[in-house]
Length: 372
Ligand SMILES: NC(=O)c1ccc[n+]([C@@H]2O[C@H](COP(=O)([O-])OP(=O)(O)OC[C@H]3O[C@@H](n4cnc5c(N)ncnc54)[C@H](OP(=O)(O)O)[C@@H]3O)[C@@H](O)[C@H]2O)c1
Image (cartoon, rainbow, N blue to C red; front, side):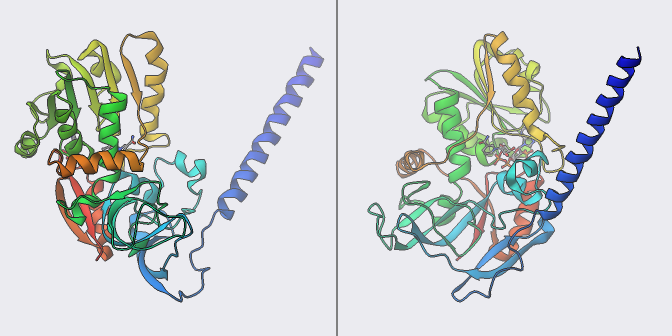
């Protein structure tokens, strides 16, 4: 008995020491977590860019920073327009909080540059670049796009802009358009005639998804609110469910593919309206203030655990923006099969207002930043 007591005492002591050590390490890591704000020399060749020194939209600032110089594999793009995505506010706000532990920055954002989607004109190219030349009009994605210039790698997420769309339309495509394409083509494997439901059909991803699903020959149901019915129908949706009046998970219709941009119904509710071999593709959900520690990441974990035990496929997708898919979307836009929907346009110094608007969760299509 005495031995057991001693072992328990030692174990409790060891656990307490470990906890104290973990706390100390966490405390030091937290206070050492910083960024380059206030530590850089005055720019010699300045450009304007939005900088995020501390978490929170109110900390965003328009500053003069050094204009980037393309390396051998990059192109220098003069940005004409950028677009805002929920992705941006995840990094600006540092939510869900687990991303701060995953290298985004414990106390402050490590990377102070924000924005991804851009469209603009190539001003210079690195010496290894053969697929672009100065003067080319391009669009794509590169971190730090809320700025006058970006330097994407020539073989990554950058493609030629079709002549029949504006820079603002082109700037809206990268994250939302590629997500919609990969959800329908790769995750949903949508076939002609299949019934596809798009929850959140009027938002950035949804407006692309409705059009792309139609171009794949699907029978499309768009879920949106009353004020967006005409918009979603004009994009080609065959059926509309007004979520303010009807709950799509309680209807009699079964769907081959559900694309979920909102995640406001439980997985079992969604399964109820999936065909026996149907696919539930979770894209996103959860507003800026509903993130908690794990936020929207808890749901794909549940889907992963559930999936092996059911006939339906359920899971989350993470878009991989790349040149090939941007070119697919450019061709669709060139052929008139895909038209970006623009809600509002803000100026570069109004990025905080644009982010706040997007965070409300009711954008109709894409929110644009006019840079030039
Ligand atoms: N997994 C990935 O790789 C990936 C990529 C891109 C985006 N995402 C995520 O996907 C989600 C959607 O992105 P987004 O760019 O489309 O966002 P968004 O543009 O902000 O979406 C706003 C739209 O959602 C609609 N909505 C809000 N509540 C709704 C409800 N209860 N039912 C149906 N529609 C509702 C709104 O319509 P009303 O105004 O009518 O309410 C609005 O049109 C976000 O969570 C984002 O983080 C994930």
